[in-house]
Amino acid sequence: MAIAPPAETTSDVLTAHDDHINAPGLQGFVLALFFIFGGITSLNDVIIPKLKDLFTLNYGQAMLVQTAFFAAYAIIGIPGAALVKRVGYMRGASYGLLMMMAGCLLFIPASSNASFILFLLALFVLASGVTIVQVVTNPLISLLGPARTAPSRLTFAQAFNSVGTTVFPYVGAILMLGTLAHEKASDLTGAALDAYRSAATTAVVHSYLGLAIALAVVAAVVYANRNRLKGEHHDHGSVLKSFDLLLQPRFGFGALCIFLYVGAEVAVGSMTVNYMRQPHVLGLDEQSAGKLLPFYWGGMLAGRLIGSAVMRVIDPGKVLAVMAVGALAMIAITTQSTGGIAAASMLAIGLMNSIMFPTIFTLASEGLGDRAADGSGVLCVAIVGGAIVPPLTGTVADVSGSLEIALLVPALCYVIIAAFGFFARRRAVPAQMRPFS
Image (cartoon, rainbow, N blue to C red; front, side):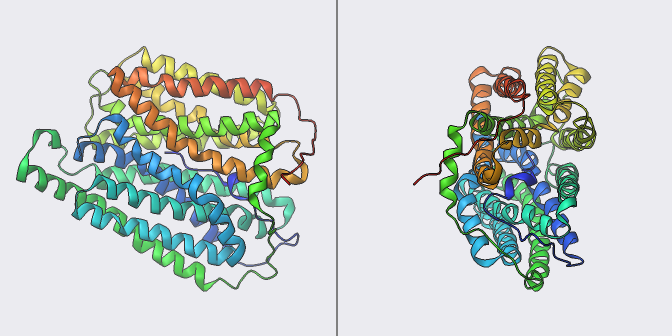
């Protein structure tokens, strides 16, 4: 994910008015937001191998890209929700888009100074804007239509998110990984190295500059429609009281699995390009390997469409357990094989990932009653797993000298997720949790 973070996490502290709002055209804007932030998040999988080469980083250092990005969910999530409660959905979305634009523009000084730290700062600012936009999108898409059809609208919006995660890596691979493909920073020194970095980062800058322009246009359109939502209502209670829900075993286990799932999804996606470049797998150049990323994210898109139908007739907990075991099987196959089989099984992990986040979210939240929105806020913070598990996976790759051994880290995540699916196969008993006093 790169994971594209899912819509269900964004309703954490916002309560929509019971009556839907008839605002033609706004649904299109919201769907565009899902597409944009899903695609931008998945670009991390493209930029990681680029920065790894440019700054001659090891795997652990390169995975700091994901740490900088996903740390924003833990740091900005709650302040972002407070901002949206204060200024409203549309203004909040426009502010988030402007912050995303600022993050894209920070790639310019990062490139000019050839500074990895500045690249990380740019990614953090970009992700902070993504976080604020996600705080808006789920409740806003729920407002724009009757309550009885809200689930179908949210599912449709998630599909747009998946389309973004499928399209952006392919385009990004062409734009960012195609330049100077036959040279490596590790083979250069002095002025030649400086010239190489300058030329290579230019492609990255141009890509994010184009995104900045697009984000400015979208932000202007959203802000121009800032008064379209009438009768907007928010619950102004403190979101910090939500964390007592972790004392409930089912919810606490589910929150842990959200943490582990996002971490595993992002770690596998981040390793894919470098994995495909290995001589015993496909031995591809960066750009060709990057063009395979849409198969990883496209598997998630297909799996969501299929899984939504399957879970109407089969218990979601059982489906979750089976898919987690399937992910383990794909990891076992890819680590014990070579060539096309290793490549295909690595990409197939995306298909196995497809239903995991929404299913874990639903099972964890079951039985929370009127505290379901509080639980959603905590699960949003748990997305910070994307900032922790990938660097751990990269460190294991560095120490062991093997990407195959590093896959044991996400494998352990899937073991725990499978256990949660088995644990949560029984319906939850509604429980009232006493909030902090």
